[in-house]
Each structure stands twice: as structure tokens, then as C-alpha cells.
Amino acid sequence: MAFIEMHVPNCVADLVFKDPYQSQIIKDYADGKRTKHLLLYGPAGSGKSEAAKIILRERLDDLSSGAFAKPINPKLYKFGDFNPLMMDWNYQMMQGSERGYSVIDEVDLFADEKHYLLRAFIDSTKLGTLICTTNNLHKLDDAFQDRFFKLMIERPSANDWIPRAQHILACEGMTYDKSQVSTLLKGFNGSARDLIDWLEEYTLRLGRRLPKAHGQIVPFPAPK
Image (cartoon, rainbow, N blue to C red; front, side, top):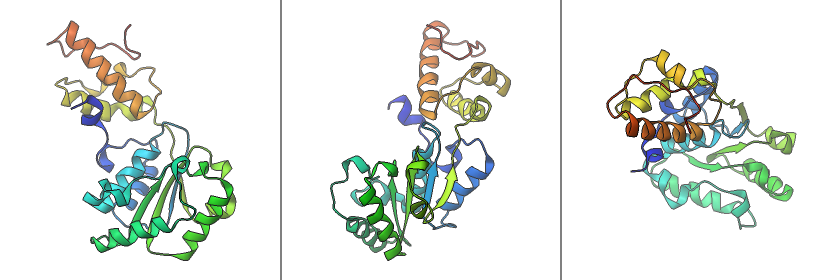
């Protein structure tokens, strides 16, 4: 199995946030305690899409990987309206879900007329919850935003990543304390994907040079 597949977040506890409030809101949605449509916004690489996928997985379980729960890419959406979403939600509820759930990544990429249609769809049904992400909140008009609970997701700092990096390294057989991982991540300011890519590179380089030396710390970025 690929390194990223082994260490991609699988539950809310695997996600990393800058603010505990952000983590609690995502957990509330994953637990079904909140059902208002959710709009996650913030800079690219802050973890919005992963959080949306985790909510979908927690709410729909095995259904989340099926054809009736695939995340929607606005650039590839070919339908003239949003009736297909209603079909997805009806199918999910027929299979036992309490309500329907759909993820729309980068919802701002819909053309203006699609935003109006999506807003009308939201107003016409209470059967499901949309989880949308955007890097460009300013491109969505106030009336559209008003239909959602808006949550800003900030990019975590190097210190925020320490427990997650420590866990990933431990899974790879490298036992480091928090101080060592702090040194390891000095200078890191990337995304979750960047972190996993770099940790893979780190473990490969360290493994080739020092197969049994777990105390050797090389700060970020990885040596050339």
C-alpha cells in the first residue's frame, strides 16, 4: 500500500486543526449533531476537503464510497439542475441513512446561474446536508452564504502537526518524542499532503542511511 494511503486521515481524530473550535464543529457534523448545510472556507491546503470527506464517511459509513455519494466537482458537473442530488439523498435514506449528504468541492467554481439553482435546491428540501468547500469565499454572494454554517479552516502551524507527525513516524517504526518531532518539523508550513509526502521522503532517506538509528533528527526541509 502506498505511504499516503496508509496515513491519509480516516477519522476526525486524524485531522489537524489550528483551533480546537474548528475541530469541535467538524466532530459535531461527523456525529450528526449539526445538520445545517456547511461551508468550509480558507486557504488551499488547510484540510477542508479532507474534513468534508471525513464527515461524509462518518455519516454514511459504507455508502460514502459508493456512486451515490461521490464528491461533486463543479467543473465536471454536466447536469442542468440539482435533481441528481435529490436522487442521491433518496437512495442514501433508502439504505438506512437518517438524511442525505453530499460534498461539493470548490463550490465557487460553479457559474452564477448554477449558484442560483443550488440556492433554490437548498430552499426546496430539508432532506439532506451539503458540505461545501471554497478557497474564495468572496466569490459567493451573501444570499448563498446565508444558507450555510460557515467555518473558516486555517492552515495548521508546525507545532499543530507535531502529534500527527509523531503518530505517523511511530507507525513507520520511528519512535521520537515531541521535542524531537518539533526539531524535525522546524520550518514546515505546508499542507497535510505536504507533510505526508515529506515524512515519506524522510523515512526513505533515513532508512537508506541509518536503518536502525531512530534518534537521528534532520530538520525540515528534507536533505537534498
